[in-house]
Length: 291
Ligand code: NDP
Image (cartoon, rainbow, N blue to C red; front, side, top):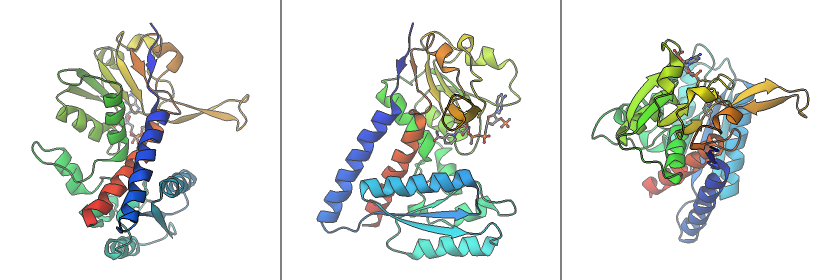
């Protein structure tokens, strides 16, 4: 069996084109152009790349972007003051604080400062709390988990009653995606570094979400034949034949798993592009909330 490849890049492109169209229609109708502000603290090279990618993506769909950069030595008060300034700025509809923050800063306090209506990353403690409660609706859902749910929908995966296994329990991917799957009536198991006999647990999954950050950890014989596998991992592995000296692989051994799974996302070109598309979508929504 060879898995259907879920083309996140193509799906994300379609979503971005829809967003671009909607943004232009809004502006033509006299509404303000949506605006996203990023807050980058310190000089983590990966964070700098992510922030640059987000600004570029905004530009491509006609969303304004504002970048605030603070040194790694910035105090808690200074970071929170920048968030407050952006909260008060009517041209800024969405605020994204790039994580992780440098050591010594209280992430939860910073995220808690973002106005709920501008929390396009969905990490405000109240939004996460609502996600975890039955009958409550968060204003925004975190972008990577939201993107995963769109991929599952696009692939026509029936979640109700399905056995879903989430590998990883981080605040930004594993836990929120587990909550979203539960909301769609899947039966969810969340695995982590202390899970016993991981391959046996994973083998029960009709739907597997791998978000561990371990290159190609999920092997072909861990996967139930026909399962749907979403690979969130982005890992650099050395490759002397590659131009940059490395290549990107997921948390799933792609070549093995594609022979067993029913559907599978590639890395790159799976979850990654969806994360950015969801950020743009949330920013457009935040602009509409402000109308
Ligand atoms: P974290 O490091 O925050 O969390 C990793 C999780 O995996 C933890 O819950 C950890 O368990 C668990 N884990 C680690 N090692 C093992 C193991 N050997 N067996 C079982 N569980 C294990 O990572 P993130 O959630 O931030 O990211 C996960 C991956 O997704 C990374 O590769 C990251 O680059 C990628 N990512 C991709 C995005 C995208 O847009 N494509 C966005 C965000 C992340 P424990 O809790 O016990 O420590």
